[in-house]
Image 1 (tube, rainbow, N blue to C red):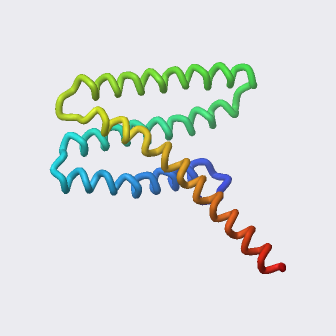
Image 2: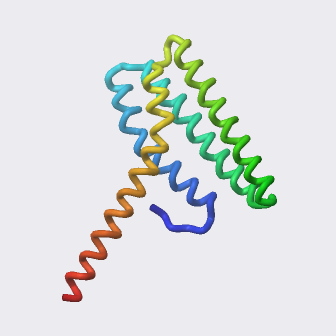
Image 3: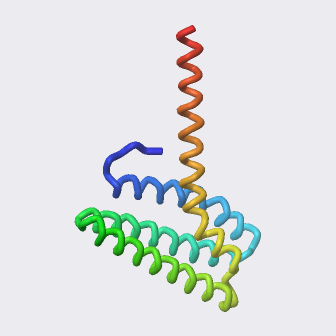
Length: 137
């Protein structure tokens, strides 16, 4: 994972890596002719990326506020995010032509990518520490 103190750069890096990871299910759904799954993945991934961007903006805005005001602001924004997720999932469930399961996967893809990148980063760091210990001995 890219090490930076600039949240916008970190966000851009995570989104880029998520899109790269998303190419696997997107291409495979197209190859298999599953247009419903493809549209669901695009829909879910788009919402996930937009809400991720919105979270960064909300955090930056909250840093300019007092602690109590920022706490209320962030809590209210989380409720709004959950409402958006509910509406997206409700639309996906009711709408034919969009796979509900693919929308869920698209929404979760960003989160799993972040967790996967952190796990890989920890493995890399652990491997380097073990390598350094072996070289010292």
